[in-house]
Image 1: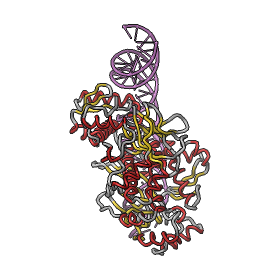
Image 2: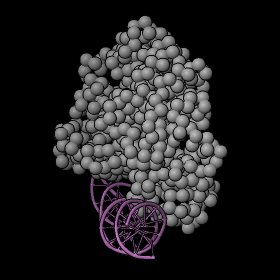
Image 3: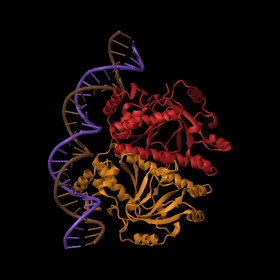
Image 4: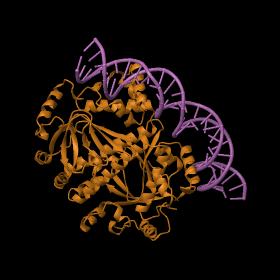
Length: 249
Length: 249
DNA sequence: TTACTTTATTGATCCAGATCAGTGCGATTA
DNA sequence: TAATCGCACTGATCTGGATCAATAAAGTAA
């Protein structure tokens, strides 16, 4: 079942979308969160034409890796992904989690090569944007260029916050910040901010936050003991978002 | 004295540039590293026209802070800057150091507001690019847009590496990585890769790497004892870049 | 030059969170 | 319903780097 698979009107729309690969951006339930925002209707038609609604990815499947030739950037259509950067030795850092409407692969533009790896965390699908064509299209579509710049800048801004988190926050602050970030993103997508299903493992969370799995587990338990959240494995209910917010630092 | 103030032909050119505020991009010694790269000569003239060669900044002076109205992004012309993000309590994370030809303020585009603070580390100057005008210009100058996207993506890519550093590297690996990053950037600007003057304090370095000042100090001493580097306060000589590289992880 | 302030170094001690070592438990299969 | 298999949780111990505490050296001002 999809991470975003709550029984809400929006989800039923989304489910329909998932089965209709060639639905236009204009009809897509992600419209407000996605690239097309602010484009004129006739521009949108052109954008639609270059988008490849590609196949679905199953849990654990790679969207791309550092050995994939760079051709495209992607927007998550359904499900979720994680990105990682790896060192020569086995070490890996989870650099981000990506939800519907969010871009994956923007850091590859500069070198025209993927420097990260992206993996589906659950059954997921993407819209593929061939970079050449996107660029070509941008030449006559300033709004599109602006949107792209804005998206890149947004990710940059998020990464700076993550640097603060990794460099300066305590374990407790890290996890509280993480939970509220996920919560906000669910809310932005029309789902409950307080009840959701985490699609990533404790290990992925720990890695992303620069912690050990054990620390994350202990903190989940403590937050639960302190009645900030309720946990049933990967299902999270935030019961005191007030107090959780105050723990973010 | 400028951090980049070695007595080399390039530096003398640069010094001249610093005194001639209205020098065109085409004449600028940073040309190869900077935004104009790849622009046609007539496009360059238009770009030149919107660039404000603004006043010099002295050590410690703010280029912008989170309370500055957003109007422009900047390219370092001479000297160097640090950027920080701050929490409500006093905590601060140094998110980056910026050298001539590098962009500062790109993370402000999304929210049209500075979310970071930028401070000069020494006597420095910038080229100011009013964002409105830059965007206007971009509408008829696809090469410029491409350059901007590329720059944004480059910083994104660097930030992912920094996340790996902050989340997964040991103190030793962090400092070795830092020294080589600075070394490479000096080299790219035509200066010695092995002998340079750090413009930032030990505290800034420590903060940026997620370490305590004392740890950085001890590591500098150890690297010196191990004959990897020689230190005379802020002057660094890399004497064994081979071994230093092997410490980066 | 001296006096003073800021920054860097070094040593001693401490601790948040890592690591090590089991145990628990939910999902899947038979 | 039991057996298997990953995750997730919890307790015990350890440690890398933080913090605390002095100096020492470099910069700055008069």
